[in-house]
Length: 184
Image (tube, rainbow, N blue to C red):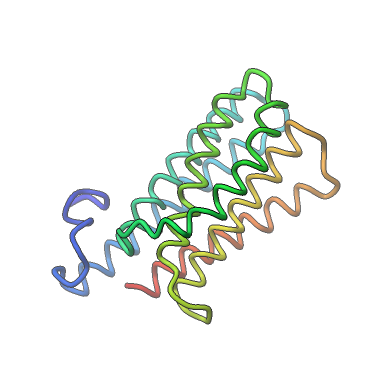
């Protein structure tokens, strides 16, 4: 049985706890590895082909995160999409207008990461030291990290952006992974 096959997407109560825990651990490891490869490739300065490969790898990681957040909450929770849409309207036109030939990939990637952020918001239930909070804060940090990366690459360099990008990126990965492990 694969990590992301239809068995993995069955509602949690119908699966034995041990199997669910293993699948969540395997999914977290796969996502973290995919995101690590993306971070490595996207971080190569001014190397367009590496950046595109990193973008694609991150896109796959976000699709995995979307699938995992859908495992937690399938309801639309459309009201939680509103802040994400506001962020999209504020950031995507600026980034795309400065991305030149990368405008379409930047827009596609932006829609996917914003969808991941919305699904994390949909899975959020209350503030506190709980999986919903960890997942939402992690998703927001991931969005901040990627926005800062795109801004520094396409709009204007941001002082200390490397530290800010990687700091928010690794904090995001940790929080999202912990959110799924605590749900196991």
